Image 1 (cartoon, helix red, strand yellow):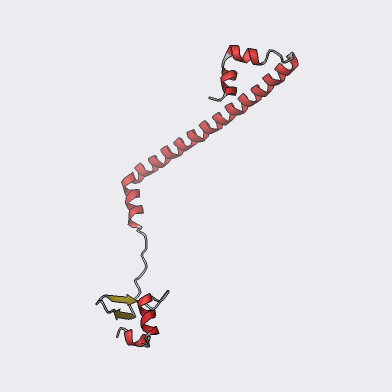
Image 2: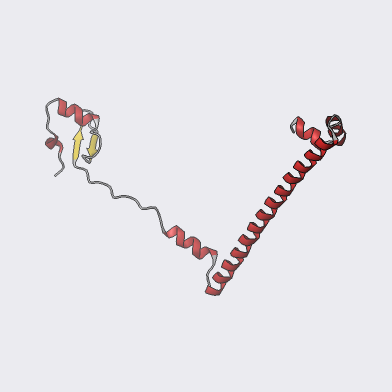
Length: 132
């Protein structure tokens, strides 16, 4: 804990820390602490009320599901059926076999692979590598 909370939560240390304050200053501190405490209580009550409303809503939904003959597994099955859509693979338009015997395929979309660029720089045409 910080020094402030150590002093604030310990009776004798607090009394020693505030011994030089006037009665009016102590009453002002008491009002401020009372205000902070009230706000904290109001916030705790609001959170508890929201939690209670959530529990009531869940109970209502559970009752509706029971009346409809459904259970949680039915809902989970519904969400698991919606799998992530995967895009179609693009068809390969060009294939090139390099000097080492490795085959490189390219769809013609995106940045041209280095092996194709090197082949074109050496005088070949892109149509030479076209897949029929």
